[in-house]
Length: 330
Image 1 (cartoon, one colour):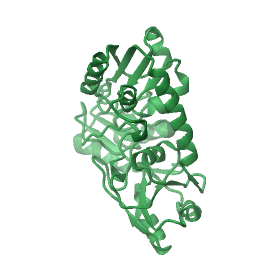
Image 2 (spheres, helix red, strand yellow):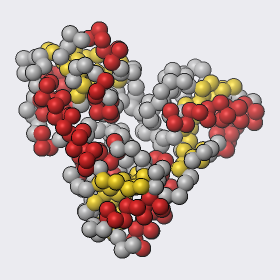
Image 3 (cartoon, rainbow, N blue to C red):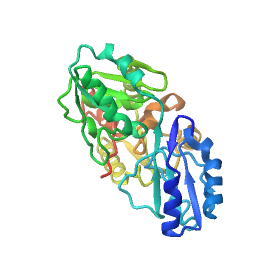
Image 4 (cartoon, rainbow, N blue to C red):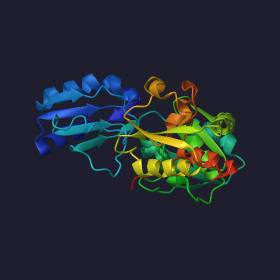
């Protein structure tokens, strides 16, 4: 299917094993265009009824098991690797493996890597299967490649909320294979080491520094503005992989000890429109997905902050120690 391979045959086998009569399908946005063709194959080849989730899915932390409980015998979640969560229905995770050649992008990265000997190699779910090929190529170029399994992740895998695979590695630089900037940004802020992106979608390589500097300026401005806040909203997600109620309660207690107000707000999805009724508050702390506060910052009229940023506001952490907020499930 285009640039990705979906192992659909595994679905047929699982349907037969558990004798599923109704099957749910859940796709991330980039793969949702294949939903009806996959549903058609399943119905034609197994006779099972298929229900497609039309909701946005942000990852394995955001699975439709609760909403489809009682509707399906099996839920198939595409594009992500499983987290160690208890789901309400049986879940089959089907990876979407990137199929194009990544070596041209790795070759492009060599010029940016020329002053570094030891490389920490990392990627996301879609590119895990090409890491050995990538490591072999880099080693033939005289590089030493180090990969590590993180807490609750596979070897060399980083998530948008889990950068444990890059902790304490004795490397000079990190090479991230994939597209986008958020994962490399997290690696940069977690390790304070150089990070190079090898983008196989564009066959190009780039340094994350300029993007990181811009994001840090934006975050500093949000934190500075929120230092004046007297009333905080602490947003808690009802999604299993993002639910951090105890953290929210601890943050509320910290805020109260500073003589300020704090209110916990439970939300399934977070958007500017849904926060309109709460505009009497001065700032919001997001204990859900860490990407929300950073990726969508410009959409919100009031500062939208991470728990890590609240610690800076309350003078419990220094700006120089700034890191991306993480959710680690193991």
